[in-house]
Figure 1: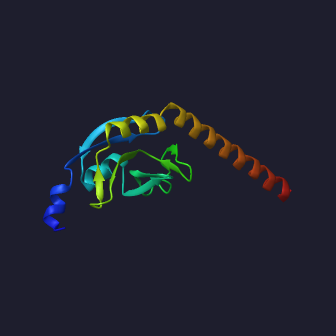
Figure 2: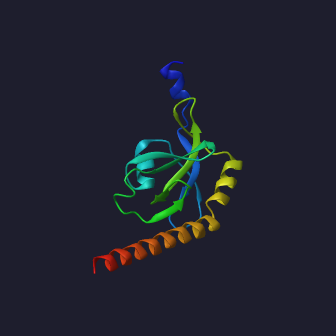
Figure 3: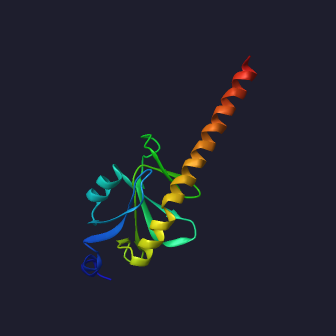
Length: 142
């Protein structure tokens, strides 16, 4: 496929979900360019994928852990910090595409209130575990 044909297939604006810490996912339409994506995730972008789900991509801040961004959502194998986008995966053209209406509904539910509560419970459990380990270390040093 020629470069010209690929450029024509790229969506100039795409519809996705913006997921911010402790907030419900918000449907947004945004320009499908690097600068806009970086502005939305507040920094350099990186793609993350959900386990057993090849149709969407999470566009996250590449440095969310280094920057100490507020924890957002548990995605199973990691906890994402800072805002992130959920968009369709246009793997055939090596780009992103709009979510379908069915995907918007699915991911609004998947990253909804229960997801926020589950993530916060996991973060609290991690904090407790860290505190207990610190106490053990302190006791062993005495």
